[in-house]
Length: 262
Image 1: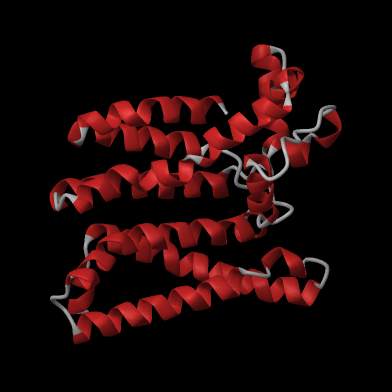
Image 2: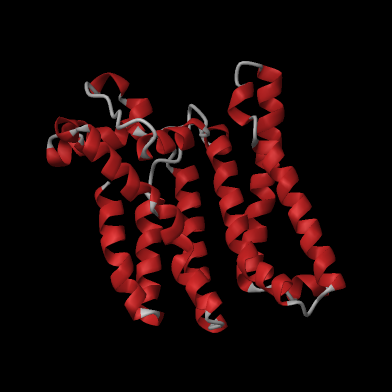
């Protein structure tokens, strides 16, 4: 019990989310095998859990053997963020299993009532291969934007600011996960396939192919489209950059604006 009380706040939060999502991933995977037709949907869930368990066991052993080693301490600093990403990938598999009451139809009707159109359907008139490549590039920047402010603070050994930043990013992620389960919504490409008349094909071997490969790893019935964590987490990264790394804020700004536009 004393070991639990030595955990940091971000580690406790990660543990609180990791345990139930791990249980749900295992249950959903077993259910998918029984049903048969859903087997492909969860094909990587248990593999991810096994890898995560091995990493956690290795970290525990390393802390016992080399408690003062810099790389072990550094790994502990980034582990809550890595756990957060693991939970995110597990949620993609299990949201629909936990809450089957989809809201994407309601969201589409709200768009029509509030602004008269569904923005992503309306915007297809502007599709060109070049714009597709640009938008994919802007969208994929999220993967370095999200941890960038925290990692720069860690490299500079500004640990109090690093922990404040990583805590803010993690809380944003976890709040988004809660809303994913509360409001399951599939992305428009799955909900409105017959309303899209234009293909988003870009140029061969460029960003659109990379993006398509990434999307192919997601379950075919993903329910993690609302809210947009890409927008929320990138905003949090900018806020902490403004507080602790003002020059980095100005570097992030055009990339975040481009991400939101995409």
